[in-house]
Length: 338
Length: 167
Ligand SMILES: Cc1cc2nc3c(=O)[nH]c(=O)nc-3n(C[C@H](O)[C@H](O)[C@H](O)COP(=O)(O)OP(=O)(O)OC[C@H]3O[C@@H](n4cnc5c(N)ncnc54)[C@H](O)[C@@H]3O)c2cc1C
Ligand code: SF4
Ligand code: FES
Ligand code: FES
Image 1 (tube, protein in one colour):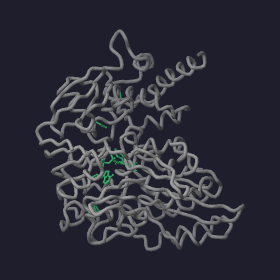
Image 2: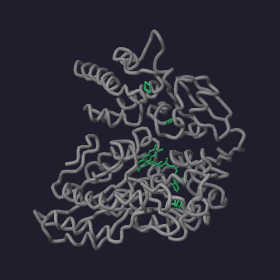
Image 3: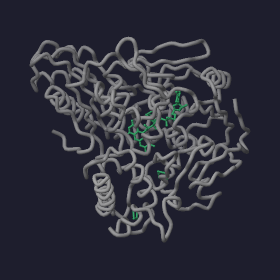
Image 4: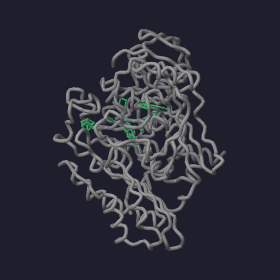
């Protein structure tokens, strides 16, 4: 790890000013991603601004009937919060499907959003990677790309965003609150992460020095019919090859609003509102779920090792919608897929 | 705002009940501080990347991977390592159960397993065997002692439940 200087922020304004004023500075929260990347010189900040002492650890009710989650709420506390378990079980389930208990204890809400890709070449500083070293090339496109994206890729980068929590937040249409040197703003979850395009060095739409202060959930709607289905190489403590967050509003046997977001397939959680709309006012059938899957995966393209993800994702969508419609969410401790 | 040059930052961390005032470079991980500076070599370095759990310790009672913690960020914290849980002659019930159930072979993962199990029990979310397995999945065992590890934990959880019911 390269040496760096360390600053402990006492106020949000302090923290923002410290990072905004120094192109080489970064925030640090749980450290579970940044410390790892710094050990391997993938990220080499000259200065870390420790934000863990800021008052951003509350989960508060909003006027709109939703919840506002402070950026420093640990992933485990969020997953086990009673309001989250009762009203946003999809979010709780997705968090508990990720990482390990130790990591979830340290990882924060803000850090989870901003964690970086697990692309092997991004981690290996001996190989070209446009995300780590813009203009150097993409080793994954013609290399080992089993874990890489099938949707929204570019010539420059085929990496995925690795978060589970974010897939649920995309389906729930969360809103990200940020504070920067020019004040506060909110970002719709769909606009928070970005596709790689020809600037894969940017994972999201935050400006340097902008800090995530909270994630807001709208009033709950999907307490009954939901599931987080995560498929991976081993049963636990592994990143998703493909994951699906599905949430349905059922009106008796008829489907109302539906949300489906995919993880492990793109540089951001993948949603296609037109695919979701196919279900509105219909009865739940396997055939219809297949149509939704086809629409979600329209334009999917593999790069060799990851070709299998297209069919895997298709089947995962059908299975997840079946689970959600039946009100039988995937259990995260017992991985038998029903 | 407190700031430090790369060479040193003064912190006080309570380790196994004893407050330690130290000046440490910001790049020192909690694991390296414990092992290299304080000679507490119970917590192990398996992967140094958060991928194995051998370095698990309790920080303010919560289990974390000490290899991914910057020690400076734990200023003011209370850290418990395997050495602080119990010592020969006064073992923690989980340490005793690991011995009784033969829950290890080489022993490299064991301090992390035990600290993790202590953390899991105080979290209180594991009730069934599949839940124990899932919530202990952050601790790998290359020797594959998993079934005996689960037995040891169940044994201690069982006695704790029996004690609670009696109270
Ligand atoms: C072995 C391993 C397995 C894992 N498995 C999974 C998994 O299966 N699923 C999953 O979803 N995740 C997984 N993770 C990733 C884990 O969820 C992330 O590392 C964690 O959520 C990051 O949060 P943090 O608080 O530790 O972030 P940090 O490491 O502190 O920060 C990460 C990044 O976010 C920035 N940042 C942090 N907070 C803010 C803020 N408030 N505003 C602006 N910028 C900020 C930092 O500058 C840094 O660039 C795994 C991690 C490891 C090590
Ligand atoms: S996929 Fe993206 S992160 Fe991976 S090597 Fe290519 S440019 Fe780098
Ligand atoms: S050494 Fe920390 S998790 Fe492996
Ligand atoms: S006992 Fe050898 S690694 Fe677990």
